[in-house]
Amino acid sequence: MNKNSFLKNSLLGAIILILVVPSVVAQEMSFEKYNPRSTLVVPGKEITSAKFRFIDIHSHQRDMSVEKLTTLLKDMEALNEGIMVNLSGGSGASLKEKVDNIEKSFSNRFAVFANVDFERVGTDDWGVKAALQLEQDFKNGARGLKIFKSLGLRYKDINGNRVAIDDKRLDPVWAKCGELGIPVLIHAADPKSFWDDMDSSNERWLELKTRPRRKRSATNPAPWEQIIQEQHNVFKKHPKTNFINAHMGWYANNLGKLGELMNEMPNMYVGIAAVIAELGRQPQNARAFFIRYQDRILFGKDSWKPEEFSTYFRVLESNDEYFPYYKKYHAFWSMYGLNLPDEVLKKVYYKNALRLVPGLDASLFE
Image (tube, rainbow, N blue to C red; front, side):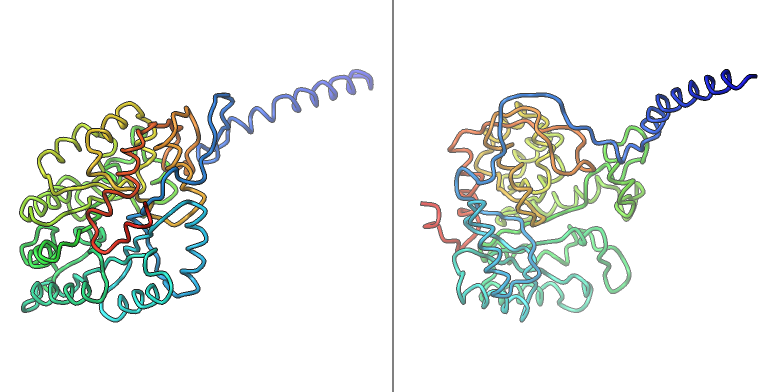
């Protein structure tokens, strides 16, 4: 091969390499990194402040110092948030300290729910003692009881057995809430997909891939259906106690089934925290559900990230189409607005919470 032919072939090879390599790199990109920007151009805009003042029934704040509350209040004002309900109130002295800090300057803008420690279930008179402590927490300013998913998943009694949600030894706690007129906001289990096979048909595959500790076997520590049924058993056994089922009881992706459950258990309410992505992909179905059950749905967010509230506002208030969700691993689909009527919005945003939770300042919403 002469010098001219060699240079010609080398140049041709370089051109081919330049053209081909970027395509090969793109094809080898992992699904975790693939996050395309939509080219769809449709009307709509971000909503950064709620149309009506709202109550966030599902927040978690470990730090409730006066300094922290001052910072929170600024963010709340920007969002048009009237009252924040902190579900991580603790019990005893810890709860009283939080309430005392609130009462120093912010008594009408924050509320605290108590928590129960289930570590000693099985000791003598555990239920009676727990109920008495809850009553004292209520006297100290608690406005409700929050049950974490650890009940049913992690807690064991003194003999090493899993404490089921419907364990009869817990009955005094549920009964005490009914007696005091305070709601129980309860989180049971997690999305069913966490119990399902982690394969190509699992809609939560990306979340389980990036957060493997969330994956459970079909029976770890019990089947999903069993844990959910234990929760429903409690609702039925204590009809005088109002229960707020966190995350719509993990049935936001099956509103027909959720409607059946709500018809069956009139003391069950639902919070929408962390399931807005399920609602935003079925706007017509979800809108009909919200209108039908408008007296039993409460606004909540869960994780405190003010920049994420706008997606909730836009799903609930607008009729916008195909706008992004903020966590790809939760939802790789886009959102649509439900365009809820104003009266339904008011009930979801604050009226239902005012009716269920004692001691909240209704004047904030006049």
